[in-house]
Length: 89
Image 1: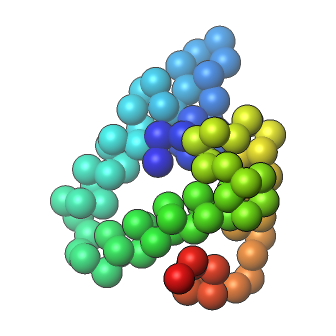
Image 2: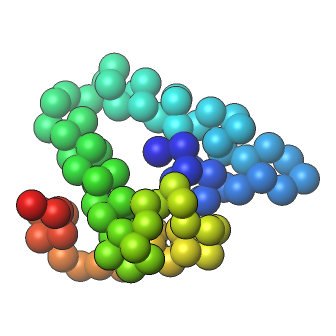
C-alpha cells in the first residue's frame, strides 16, 4: 500500500504520500471504519496490483520502477472488468 500511495503522490520538493504515512492512515481508517467485506476487497485489490505487475513485468509491484508502477495502476484503473476476473487462483 505504501508503494501505491508513493507512486500516486511521489516525493518532490515536498514529502510524498509514503513519507507522510498516508498508507498507514488509510489502513487505520479501513480497519476501524469498514467491515470485513471492504477489508477483504482491499486485500484482493492489493493482490491484483501485484499479480498485474508480475504478469506485465515479471516482478512484484514493489520491484517495479516508477513508470512501470504507474502503468500497472493505470491499467487497473481503466479496466472495466470486475476484480474477481483478475485474481490469480
